[in-house]
Structure formats: C-alpha cells, structure tokens
Image (cartoon, rainbow, N blue to C red; front, side, top):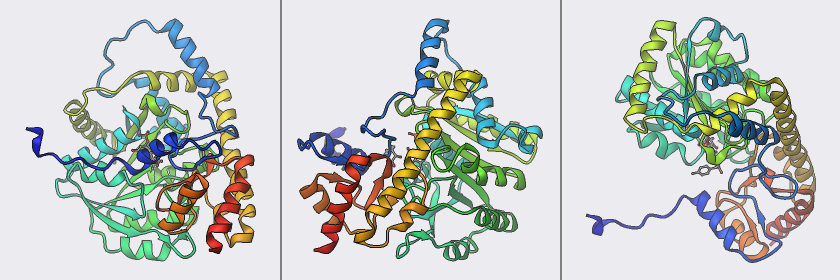
Amino acid sequence: MFEHLNTLPQDPILGLMKSFREDSRTDKVDLGVGVYRDEAGHTPIMAAVQSAQQRLLETEATKAYIGPAGAEGFNHLISQLILGAGHPALNDQRVNTVQTPGGCGALRMAAEFLRLCKPDATVWVSTPTWANHIPLLGGAGLTIREYPYLDTATLSVDFDAMMAALELADAGDVVLLHGCCHNPSGADLSPDQWTAVTDLIERKGLLPFIDIAYQGLGEGLDQDAHGVRLMAERLPEVIVASSCSKNFGLYRERTGALMLIAANAQQGRAATSQLLSAIRSHYSMPPAHGAAVVELILDTPALTQAWHHELDAMCRRIIELRSAFSEALAPAGDFSFIERQRGMFSFLGINPQQVKILRDEFGIYMLDSSRINIAGLSANTLSRVAHALQEVLGR
Ligand code: PLP
Ligand code: TYF
C-alpha cells in the first residue's frame, strides 16, 4: 500500500525551526516561527497559567469525556472575551461557541461546517495569507479565491484593490479576514476600513469568517476585537475561529474556539447541531486541559488580572520592539511601516537570496518570504540584525 508514496516536503515554518535548532552558532537569531519570546528568547509559561494548572492539579476530579462541544464554561467565557460582555449578539442568543483543538481545529471545523451549508462554497482569502489557511480550508473541499490585500511596494493594506476584488464575489461567498495582527504582514484594517468592509459584505450578502489568533497582542484585548465585534453586531451571520495559543501561551495544549453567530437563536441551534455532528466525525471531542486552564483564569478575578497584566506587558514589548527596530533600520532605508504594523509579524521586503545570505552568513533565520517574528528580537540582537540587513542591502 505505501510503496507508491512520495516523501513530501515539511511545513516550511516548522522546517525552519528544525534548521535553527541544528545550527551550532551561539549568536544565531530565530525570527521564524510565530511564538512569543521574552527578552531572553524564552517562551515562558504565563504566571496565571502556572497558577491555574497548580489549582487544577489539586482539584481536578475526573478525566471522563467532556463531549464534542468541549467545556461549557470555557465556551461561555471565551465568547465574552472575544465579543465583550453584554454584546448585543450575546444578549440576543445568537452566539454558539464550541471548544476546538487550537485555532487550526476551529478553522478546519468551520470549513467542514461551511461545506455542509453549501457544498460548492467559495472562500476568499487575502493575498498573502497564513500559509496554513490554504490546506486547512482547501482540504475540506472549499474553493479558494484570493483578494489582493497587501501593496508590496509600501507593505501597507491596498484597500482599494481589496474592495474592488470583493465586489466580484457572489452572494453566499465567504470572506476570510484576519481579526487583528495579520499573519504574515502585520498590516491591519483601520476601524473605518472595517466599517467599509462590513458595508460591502452586508450589501452583497457575503459571509464573514474571521480568524482571530492574536487577540491582545496587537494593541489590547478590546481594540484587537473591534472588527469581530462590529461585524457580529451589524451582520446576521458571522463565523469566528479563535486561538488561545498566543494570548495564553498554550500552544501545545491545542486550545481554541469556533463561534457561529446566527441570525436568531433557532437557526443558531440548528447550525450548531450540524457543527457538532461534523466534530463527531472528525475527532469526537477536543482535548480538555488547555481550555480548563483558560476557564479557570477567566472565571477567577485575581487570575484574570494577573493574565491581563502579563499579556499587556507582552503586547507593549512587541510595540516597543517595533519602534526600536524601525529606528535601528533607518540607515538602511524606510522601514517605518514596521512601527505602524501590529502583532508578531512583518515582512522585511527583501528577496529570497537576501534571506538566504542572512541565514547562511549571519545566522539570522526568517521565512523565505522575509516574514520576521518581531518578538524574536531583543535589545541585544536588534542592532546586530539591523546591521546585517543594512550590509546585505548594500551589496
Ligand atoms: N490563525 C493564524 C493566522 C495563525 O497564525 C495561527 C497560528 O498560530 C492559527 C490560526 C492557529 O493557531 P493554533 O492552531 O496553534 O491555535
Ligand atoms: O505562522 C506562524 O509562525 C504561527 C505558528 O503549521 C504555526 O502561526 C506555524 C506553522 C504551523 C502551525 C503554527
């Protein structure tokens, strides 16, 4: 059976992690995979997560199954975190949320659900988008089309081109949007642009599908959810895939949520029953631990406060690194876009040969697209990276 199989290349992002690990240079810098790092280059377990885990260890009474929707308490609290307590969609019982294995699980189950709703559904994704969006959505059988998003000359949102492309979408088409901290570009929609996209989606009868994997790491928990909250208030149906990997640092615990916002409570119940049936035929039920940690944090005021405090410090560190790095790069050119962008990622806008030189000669690792993880920089490495880039650009 297996003799006809070819060996496939590995995920380029995870492959880069492996090459970095195998590099013996002590001054190497990892700007590849999107995990938050502190000033020492570590990805620590957040203090609130440590405390919650400790408490769970002492109080957890069973490991019995939790069911396909996961933990009810988590689903309720994560909906409030994303939409804000008292959001009209919550008050009107239009929101149904299920716990998923990470943001990836949410994206894939949303795709399976969309295929049940409309077997020939088309999903419009931004160019560029996170590389995993294509296999996660396309693998479920959805047709993928692209809308231009980034002006590659200025590395800012090409909003006119985006809107012109979405004018070509048909009623019932799905539009995938990044809720905040666009991966890979860091270029986000402004509040006015969110309003304009909401108007277009409403007028054309499209379905917004928002991937929010970095809430709290762009500008703050509330600011980063602006687009989701606006669309959930103004539009009859919205799908939201969210992740606790980054903002709770729970990466390997695979903790995320999929929110279906329906026109009314009755349609929401029917939609959720379909989603739960799809979940049952894929993985039956999600892993419990990460969501139990998040639920305990969001349900315990002292832990919520500690978590807010630490998340805020992570967010500020990224913003400060953005300013310092664009300043350090000033002699090499205009990199002010890095300061204007948000979240973990920005493109440097250099070509793959230049990326390779930085890796081979300087031990500085980034994706071939020149996407860097800003959080991988530190006060120590920042000027070394800036000088290396200046040298490579000057060749
Ligand atoms: N969506 C985007 C844009 C991401 O960058 C990520 C990755 O971390 C995810 C979703 C999914 O994250 P996870 O499955 O690790 O929760
Ligand atoms: O884009 C990134 O670096 C993160 C992490 O298969 C990631 O989103 C990368 C690859 C992958 C899953 C997560």
